[in-house]
Length: 586
Image (cartoon, rainbow, N blue to C red; front, side, top):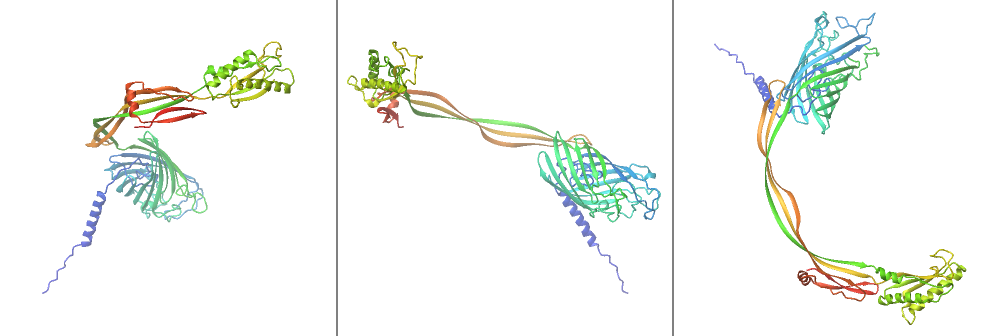
């Protein structure tokens, strides 16, 4: 007799799937994650997020938020259904209005998980009762700029108001007997990603996108419930503005799978307040714009939240050891300086040359005093061949203008004849003569006839002379010292990180002592002049045709003169020349 054995094979596929799930969980849990790099707003029902959609980042470890919101609903012509879901004809339509309220609390676990609970509707059993919920979000990957997370939210069904069959929770958070339990909206799993696109000290821009089922997608085929449904895709953007002192303002826009919403929320630190508009593009009607559905109408609400995030305090104790080092170098600099200054004509000499001579009425003959004045001029001009003069003849106001011009010319000619004559023999090329007639009187009119008058005169102006050059040569010894001070700085820091939690006492996260830096830097470089010795090699006035003999002023100056090679330069001004000694260098 042959006996058959029924061998039960191992469920290799089931074992493999369990191992795969375990390995995937270990990989996810081993990924580095970071909590919110800055405080995200509080949503109505999902903990951290925008208005009605979650984000990928989670609360920091043991950070807690509590949120309360209220939203006003209204419908001018609501649709009434029977127990089978068929619309009834209304004989006395009443406007529907309601304020729905939500409350939630969330807590962060290990910078990776955010857990929370919610309550909606706040009503007794006969009015639909409370709708209780719970939510969780696990950070799968998170950095300061990008995060990916998976989560879910569960909401209990409302009481059926005594109607047959159960009801499904709707997205507005109040019992609606038109939503049967055929809608699977109790459990809403989702995946979401958030990225920080722009970041500065005063502003951050974040974008969020995700996909979910349940509350994110169910009911898209109901005319009264959905108008712009995306089939579970949701997303939004937020601009986070820093106001200083830890305060933030969040400007938000989103699509939760059915509605386009916008809102603003002010984060004042421990307290957050905001307002929002829900269903901005809703038409408020199913067919003919008759205001039949609150789901399709525009709604407004407010939100308030109290937040207890982790307060991370870093205490740093710094120990600095500085080792100074100084290096001094000495330099000796020898410079030679030659200064030459042009000297003007001496005032006494100019006064002699520009002294006027006077004439009698209607005469051009030279008086004895005029000849004496011209003799003094001639002596000066013979001593300096470079002097040139402008000679101007003048007459008083009597007579015609042509006559007076001619009289002025005769007086100037008489002066030139005397200076260039045989008594002095000056070169006529050194003079320029002209007549002003009676155009430039000096004394008041009328001019006296029998007394001297400066209106009957010859003026003189110096138009050229041999310039005098004053030359000074000095040698300067400058001794300088340059001190360079360097510091070798070793900085050691002891960093203590302390976390203050809403639950439990503050604890020390870490204490670490490390050498922060070991640097050598130049802290100062100063140059001081230790001594300056000036040797005067000579000072002299050079005149026309003279050669200045420069004598050393001291033995040290004589040594400087011997050490310097010299070359003779000729300085020419007009017709005169002066020889200067200038240094050429060592």
